[in-house]
Length: 393
Image (cartoon, rainbow, N blue to C red; front, side, top):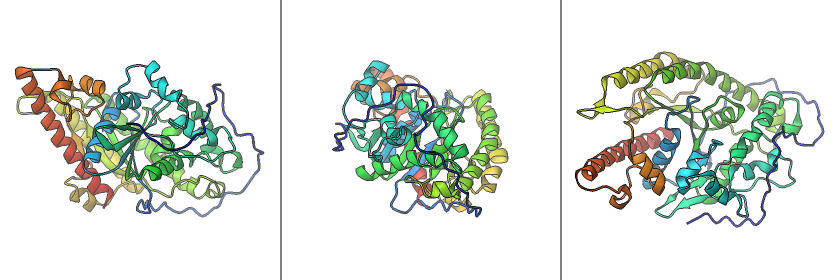
């Protein structure tokens, strides 16, 4: 079953790869000097936006977004997955596509059916307002929707970067920093969405800066290895700068007057998600993986948490406690999916909801796999409960 937003206009996308600058006149305007912290109030009738971000690749951001989103949907939340990675892996997983040729099918249909087409009016100076994207859905879980990605989203990176650096003096670009958030919210409103999960690319570029700073909350997926430890140091250096940019941007007069203003939010850290390790007997991580898990948690607590606290990017300690967590403790920790991930992608189903037929196994192997699925189901259920408790605090 597919989305059915009744919008007949097909938004053709620009094919060239150059910098896209709206063809309006340049004017110099002042910047308001009073800077105030964003309130972070997400209970204003808007959908709650959660970014899944780590600039280190290979940490299962996409599979986490899909499986966590599905579990939240099972618990009664209307969830919109947004594929903001130009690789479009989430789109492929959700729709069961195995190659670029199949993904291109949704681009050839009429209507606004992907993130690039949805943003085109703002980024390509089209004389029409942004409109909801026609989302995709799954027949077995109607509470879960997808706003498909597009490889061409990367073409907007440079333009957005210019807007976010110079928007205080260039009204030409004033509508770009708030465009993505506005598109997500009007799409969410059309479908009655409660939660938006944003799957992001592994980069520190302007698009990711925008996505994280316009989200109410963020999760940091990690893998138990040396590079995730290094990435934690990097995040501790970058995220405070992004928050400083947000405060200044929200107090920039030209952005306040934009058609698509930046949302007045203050992104809060929900926690880390540590995956992709091997188990030993007793369903605990092997010694080598446990060392990296301990190192990551130590680095998060000693390096990342203090800078997030300083920049008001944490919830109160009581909020984490209510969700059964200590500040800096992983929100979710689970082993590698192994063979389940291939069947999950093949059937567009989460690893914990595959049927016996979809598993294509029998006998002892099937029973062992089903025990693993039960464990994954329990872990994702606990993670979903924690997310709900944290965002509702």
